[in-house]
Length: 267
Image 1 (cartoon, one colour):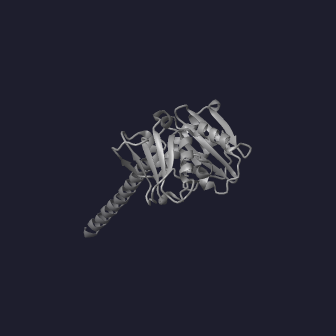
Image 2 (cartoon, rainbow, N blue to C red):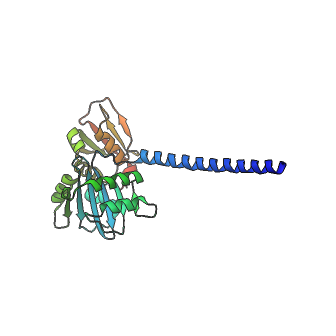
Image 3 (cartoon, rainbow, N blue to C red):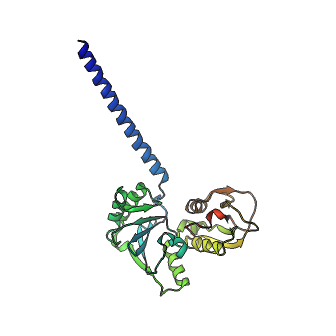
């Protein structure tokens, strides 16, 4: 009898151990999903741009939920550092996928799905939730709502800027039409102009670019009034903290570039 009781006790302990491990696994998966949802950036409402790199080919796909459309821009220029496409052309890239598959209008869905897998394509600034939602969205877009464009060295800077603005301008930022001032508080010449170019391509209304009176270490975005979509988008995209101010200024939003962003990959 004692042996049977001991055997039953061991089975119970083993069962409890299995349940404990299973519970920890479920809890771990739950928290991972929560964090993925929290960190996801494609909201299914606003325009979202992804850079696809396949060997020497660079394509930027703009996902536009408002128009239920996709625009594919093929970059024919030679880019020495593909990780700095935002800096090179002023394109507001929200995420990046490095793949071996050549992007076409018919396989965007499959490349996005493949990128979800841990052994799939290399991704940057994207979560699996983003990729899944983007894949579903691309699947629902009809062929007639997919347009293909290209830019190359045959276009001058003004033509490139016009094309990029037309393709990647965020209608919400454009409609809010908040005035934006940029202050370059670094010793890097032209940094403010590059950021102004990028923000203009996003649909922003830059009214002034100037140099700061002194060098600042930390970048920040100062805003007055409501916390608008424009302010939140710029803060998230540029990874700059927000600071609310009651002081009246020439602009609704002031972006101060500090030395922490002097070597960034956005502008």
